[in-house]
Image 1 (cartoon, rainbow, N blue to C red):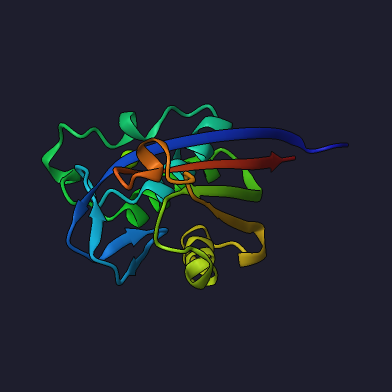
Image 2: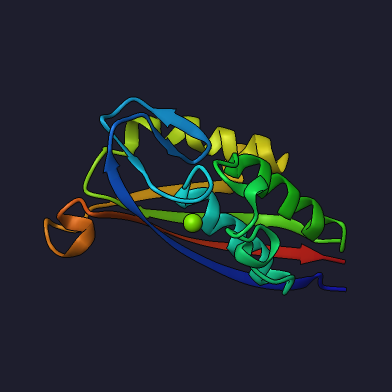
Length: 161
Ligand code: MG
């Protein structure tokens, strides 16, 4: 019998502000800017969280962690992803793979890619080879290209028997 399969999609945007470090993909990157948000504003982990919740049809990150709640202020998005995954996994889902794109003019993602994939894999208790990540610039145009915002897109494939 074939396993039941579900695909999920997540997207997120955060504004860039001056002063580092940058929290991205669960790690701190030593640059002179950061992302603004109610939580720690980890745009990549937010997109991944929404992709998992979307695939399992268990709502979205804003529903699970409302920005009106004081307990979510400055919250570690790694902890939010872990809690969301626990909820998804509890209904029998396993992750086949997660594929992500970060849209940012800087920093260059490649030097940080392995560390980010390992961190995400550790949060989800997966092999790092199941997580892939690409960095794309905005080619100096639009809000990404002029350094106003960063965005992330994530897709995941879940399976269960
Ligand atoms: Mg967000």
